[in-house]
Image 1 (cartoon, rainbow, N blue to C red):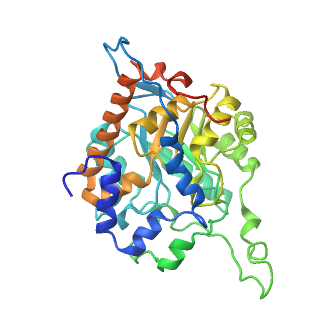
Image 2 (cartoon, helix red, strand yellow):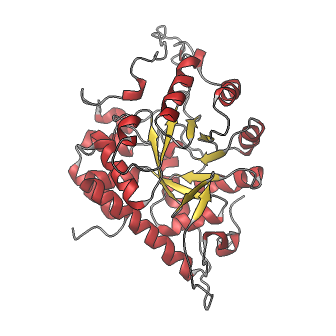
Image 3 (cartoon, helix red, strand yellow):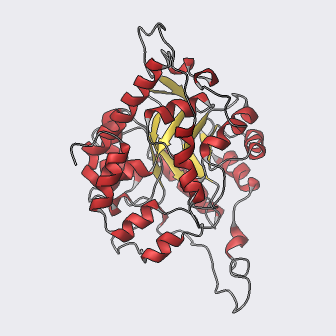
Length: 364
């Protein structure tokens, strides 16, 4: 292959370099992977309106998000175990993020501690993503640790109280190597699962659901955070949940179906985003992930109500292909594609991007 030119090129390079089991872990979706495929198919299916002779002098992609000034609307999504795809792991991701002015939402399941990334000579803008823990004091401790290290926002993932049924990953026999660890979770209490009785209820009889989080836990977390701490929820698809998030004082939502890795046959992010945007009506910002592979996808997400997008699998593809330089290049490629799409739809700034750039009304 010649030098990679787009996200798909990096995906092909990554597949050639990763062992089949690791590739299955990275790419697999839930069950029959209908939602994973829908994420990828829905963005290209939306058509754009090309506009001509529009004033474009002074065009830029700058924005303000939760009080933070950003150069562009691309963030790196929280994904576990970057050390599986590159020896430098999350450090390489952080270096690429810093070089491109890209916020990095670090996963609590990372193999590199947030303190180490914050101590880099030129650290990126770090956010921290985590799950509610079995012991609620562990949840608060994770949040406090991230804030002490300099995290600028907290992201609580709420759409995966249990793992999805990922048959492709199961068939591959994937097991993380011994050196791959979730360093932020060490010493915390794991879920207390017990073997389900023979012929009994496989999940409901396991005890795993006894400690899943509820809106009461979100309220408690919000109450215990220092005043002014931005708290986002990741994994909201339903407008009623979006309205509940508003009622609980949430600062922002990430519209996401977990890359299709949890419940299969959920709507794609592209399909779900407009209804969530109508529910929040601009009162809090939205981000979106799932299937973003082109600058035109970013433009469409913004047209449907998002303030920005996150890239998950594409970031890992680029890391696998060439570490920090490759990931920095991919981010610049996506930013360049977005700028081209803005120019050809007559949008000088991100504020000019709205439903009018779409050739047909957005999905309802």
